[in-house]
View 1: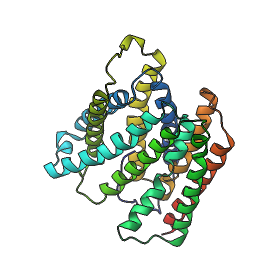
View 2 (view 1 turned 30 degrees about the vertical axis):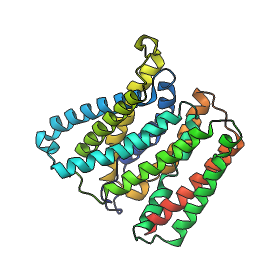
View 3 (view 1 turned 180 degrees about the horizontal axis):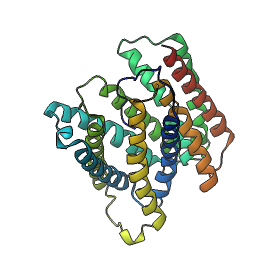
Length: 306
């Protein structure tokens, strides 16, 4: 998910097209956790993530040049450096670590943990001198309580605690990347920005995968068909279709409406993980997830009023 461009006007009428695009973001981004879980069944985590973002970045670059002309991709060295840093934070640190964690953590639990991102962003805003409303801090505390409950499966041995902690670190890095993107000079074109971020993050994932030795003993013939299909799904639908719908929504629909993806995606991910992968929904996951989503709801609704 790319950093958010400036907030659009909120007084626009919500059309059927907007709801259709919002449904795409709800379902497709919510389903990416399932896609990741299936991809890493037989694919190395960072090499698969790197392949995903490099291919998606190249496709998006070609689409931008085709639809808007090569000039849309023109950036200054400083803008390119900023996009590279943000891409590494978001896609190598954020998404890459989630992919690594999903080798041991159920996709639904991963999505619920990632829902904590809005809470970290509020804390970063506060550290930078911003003063969100007290109700927003209440949402943060509620969400943190939910995170504590969500770590219970790791503490009890139901899942690896290291995987849970890895995702929490990933959410922190994603939050830093999202927050930083509004403070440093980024390319003016949001699609070009995303393309450069994907390429930077993809190369970062690829290099880290090679450093970890993920290529050693890798036999492409042993990668399952369903893992290949999952990777293709992540490239086309997760990185291209859903992002295009999201970027369009940010320029068309009220931000308060678009932001609802933050607490709808985890619900979609949990349902798909349970239905397709038969992931067991334990009480700590159900209760902790509900508390995290409630905290995010409080944050989003409070920020909408302000």
